[in-house]
Image 1 (spheres, rainbow, N blue to C red):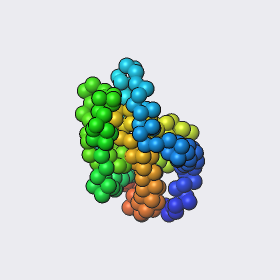
Image 2 (cartoon, one colour; image 1 turned 45 degrees about the vertical axis):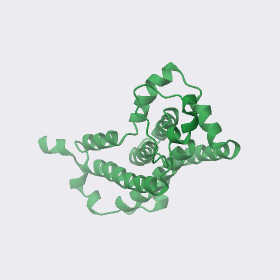
Image 3 (cartoon, helix red, strand yellow; image 1 turned 180 degrees about the vertical axis):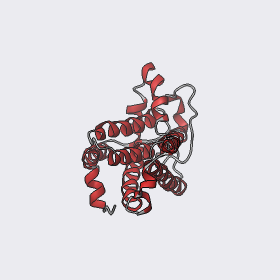
Image 4 (cartoon, rainbow, N blue to C red; image 1 turned 90 degrees about the horizontal axis):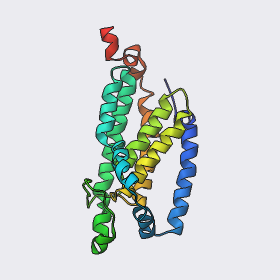
Length: 220
């Protein structure tokens, strides 16, 4: 299958259009408000309910979630599992390189002189370094793009975009990242995944019959 960038964007157009609208809204927020104002607007509005669910939501962007998902997909379709696994690897390497280059402080370190004002959720390990960009957000948006591309019913794009947005919000709510980190993570996740799909899903080997079956087919 020979698919170009336009072909990939056509397959994910609902996700991409909604994402661009979301991104535009985020840029407006960034222009109007400062980094500190945005952080405290999120961190200062905490509830017991959100404290209880946000750690689980943030885990949906965890690398282990992507690894387990790819392993399960291998039972049914090697191609889809391979796309999921390699998308995670490529985007993760990129985000780790960016974290190393920028070495930005996380909220706990950034606000070290007023840390008593910050709200931390009990039981969550709060990191101090490598804040920019958000890896969890990158993973969530990368998976959102990939599965929008793969699923026949493109209306799933709405739920997948919501999933990515909620993971991004959880990273801010838990004081692991700033708004800028989350937005950058989403941009990196979306753009790299589009480029990776365009390149890898055009390779002949991945579109052979052998790659479009899974481990379970060997046992049937």
